[in-house]
Image: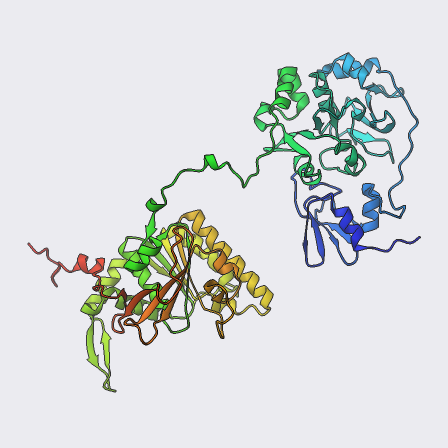
Length: 598
């Protein structure tokens, strides 16, 4: 009967592999054919969930075809069909070990007794070709592998090969007992080296580290062992076979691996046996451990840090700093609020505070020209006391800065404050794609410790599809958080709120426009808003997320009350005096001639 592709068949087949799905493709961590090659490439093999077509993207493998062919090649039997690959029934033999086999195995540190127990022999017509018979758990000869003992690289075509159309199984199965841990090695001589050390439950894979067609044939048998110890080859700081077996063996199976340090600089079990003897092999097995995850460590190994003593940048707004204890290095801070209510002004004042704390800063202003941003921050640094008032032609009061004041302020932050050049053109790449790279360079080259981004959401609006927009936002914010942690800097991102009525939102953080990941990945979320008319202040600052300290100010009643100066653009706590910044302290003691006052 002709087979018709069924997605359920694919689901059942994929259950024995580690996979992930994207769009209509099911991606496998390891290719069932090449296993990722010697470099252990991952996620190169996929099957289309609609058509059943598969392909490996590795050029040295390049396997492609349809699901039914994959099942045939891997020996997977689709229920109710006969699509499984047919294997030869080999003539049953119990060969006696030849003198040539005994001599060669002795040169590899394997005794005559072990050689005879496992029936290692040589071909009658070619005594230089070693024969490894593979018997299943019932003692049935199922697979045969050959090895040329005098192989010459560049002259001989193959060093090892197997009987055509024989069913691949593990070597040494008929010598194993279920009550003990099972040791799996890459090569037959390696498993015999383990047996030589007096450890009987040793098997080896039939076709090397990248071939796993044997796994489906031996899966039920493997499940009988509570513990499996992987003793693969140690290559480039990794143990072969380990990743695939960790991914594909049942969760109930305890998978351990020989520690890399116990290889003593050798490649495999046979090398260890010949260099250091059977005791070293036994120690490898005894010391085998459950593999440590690269991204997991013991809590006891984590450095103890006093949160109150973390390096922080103060905002300069006393009550806000009292609540959040300043912005700790490594944190991502989100500042949100309605358009035109002053969130950008609050951001620029925080920049002034950072400069006053001898922190270098970098700002991206997606909405203001660079000269406009400079003028704004110069006013804040100057303060009301250094502004010159005048009446414009409409009769309104305006304010300006004297040339000398601007020069002194500029000289004070020269070499410490940087801004993104909005006129820069980079082959048409969008800003949100290139900005993380720019930020990283600024951190490294200019030692920037406060990064402010206002307002990148405008650049992201160029993404047409809503799903892609949210994905782009999530990825970008994730990159920002990673940079903050990696380089121990504070990154402040200004974000617009969602449009429309706020009714129906359970959480203030849900009001931030875009992907929910924006606030999920943030450490602090601040909201700046106009105060109600009956309040004796201009604006309110709410703290809707505070990951380290936990203290929140989410209601109007609990929010931090601040006033705004239209002249200097400064934001201060109610009743707080205007601050004198470092530039004024530095230059205030000099007269016009630049002479010292003594």
